[in-house]
Length: 364
Ligand code: PMP
Image 1 (spheres, rainbow, N blue to C red):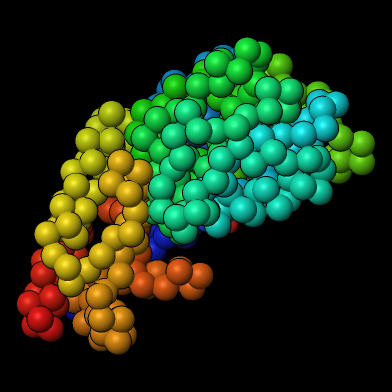
Image 2 (cartoon, rainbow, N blue to C red):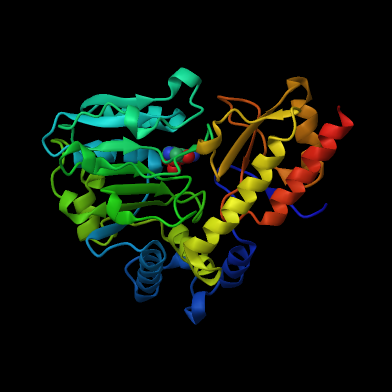
């Protein structure tokens, strides 16, 4: 078989270099006589891995000193509860912007803890755009505003960061950045909390990275389990319990790879080139269709449909035979989805576009 290009939405492709290094180190990490999987999380070897991972993350993302970095388990889905539990701070409501499946899940969970003001929603157009901030109806008294910068399923991405200063008080901006974290430069200081499951751009499943501004720590809703308290994890350097050590190690290797490859500025350039290649092709043909509004198209997840959906199965079969795998769209929306995270090389997108052209020509 030819080279495999894996377009999975997550867990997703990792840099081949990183996997090779992990293979070489799997039995014996740096002459320690141990696999990383066998190390005590409190031993000096793993502590050095954790410290380097955090330092590299801070450097790459430009994380200010007044933000804690937490390495947690429980996935981004646990953050849907942890955000309200930690950030309500005595208030009774929170603002949420609803742009699709992941926003909906966050909203559903938040409703267990507070009143949710849906400040804006793109449901009117089947979640195919990001509502402009001018039309948001924000409750200025609510505890925070939560949004999903990149909707992994719908393929909708904000190419701007909401400005909450216009509501007249310091309202923390909370972002579920699971599928766009580390894909472009970001100004962390604009956010109160950023959380991201690692399994798209930065590592394997099992690790969720949380960045939290220090002044937001310390007030939880009554009954919050210890494991759901950001402050407990912050005070214990994410070692209150056993953190997901192996995913942290692989993430560390991915961050080294990112640094070697020019950091977030360089990633953004490549990601724009990949996304442009695919969207420009999609727009030249009516054999395929991308439903997302042009300014809000995701650089990470590209959903598209075939005009003749009876060809879906054949498309996937022939793509698979060419080494282009995991292109099936999410079960809730159907069609296709190409996820083109950091570790997907430009060649992979070129191979996909070439195949799509040929498939269209032979079924015209
Ligand atoms: N939010 C977004 C935007 C996601 O893409 C995902 C996973 N696909 C999640 C949350 C849930 O993440 P997890 O499965 O790690 O809980």
